[in-house]
Image (tube, rainbow, N blue to C red):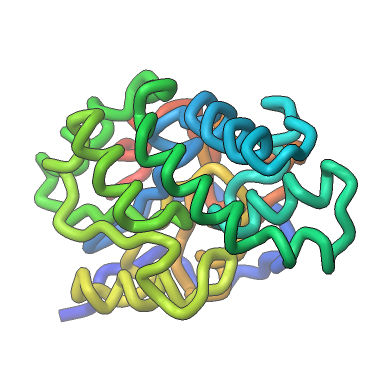
Length: 245
């Protein structure tokens, strides 16, 4: 039997952007990002990060700053905030360990308290689950925080696998996390749809060989999401099942 995948596979596409021709896909599983895709966590980042900076006597950052910096993992977010506050690379590195410890404590205390599930997320997850598709959550957020947030928002029951930014040796946009998640799901990358909100998700999916759908909301480092490589754009996770054959 021919393995499910996207059809056709031989059309040209720029690795730096652009949208492939509209189509419906036959896939065996779906991987979904967390921050900016399923849950608006900007409020959590704001509280925890600014509390951390305050502990260190460093200048605070705005939500607009955080939206541009978020998406590449907590260590990158902290380092970027320290640099934005006037430290050079060496100065930020010197504070990184203490900042990381304080950030973890602050984030653990408020995880989910200042965040909200985006409209259409639960509907989309229910529809995908009803199709019998195994779902995995793959995020650059630390795994413990990701699991706690999914539990707090009642989304954990939809996922057979959850992986975080500390689950593998590298994080998105490296393709390794997607390839490892596909292995855990038992599907080939070409038969595994990635759903995310940023260029990190898009570039990782392209490099791994996964089709990718991007939501039009979320956090994309201040850049228009249309500029990221994608196979489809959706305004709601509830629209994703309609992409599938």
